[in-house]
Length: 384
Image (tube, rainbow, N blue to C red; front, side, top):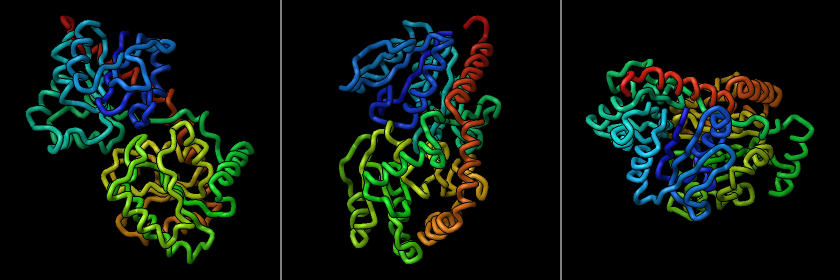
């Protein structure tokens, strides 16, 4: 099959600026390209040429200002069997009009059918233009099927994943060596490290971890909180919220470390410094891919019950789930539980690693998408 991937207008592909969608594409694209002719469209970036071929993958990049128009023109010219549009239902309407002979797959990584993002008329047109849809979680699937009269079979759940070979479990000899080196590099050798990894925004909730730290230090005087991330992918600038985080942390400055943005290539090693990883999301998280990463590294996971998080982090089995997600004390209790009950935390972490190995690697994701593409092509009418 001739397959086109249409990225969003936010970030380029490959993921030189980060981004969950771009990182997933980087993981599955080489696998898809082994069996199919793959072209990836994304926005232009100073770090990347306008067009290039990397292995079996062709990349075409257009200026952000004219991106959607340029993509529509390219889709009409190249005549793909399948066009996979990532997270953008409204532009898909024009893409499908430009290439009506193609099967269109729309993958949803956020609640893109929210009335705040799309009108009812646009939603209907986008759903009619799609051959099939995929969603990164059952939660995201429900954001469509609960709002619109669409056949649930038209929306397939395709979870994201990782390359498990890039994540060395912390309990292995190599994992322990990397852990020691990372902790020494950050001056955390003798600390119990609580790790947050994500964009520094109120919806991600890192303020709650700072607020729970005084109680945690009473119980665990050697605790330290490491906050990894920036204002935006690759952006080390400040915001009013980030300034507030630093103000909250100031009384405990020797126990709160802000690393700013860290390139994704270093995340597998960075995770190993942690004793507990915490996803403190306050919004309806689609299903943050950082869960897969922490689980693959064998780090005990604490998360909130927001959105799709609990579809892979199962309370008491593969992690600890917080229901009272706005309460700093709830985070204290969860983190304390993981630090005190080390054997149980390690058991959960090993189950989580096994789950990733068995179900959530990039080769699983690629195979599931390939099944979707085959079904999408077979469902087209003969005159298309």
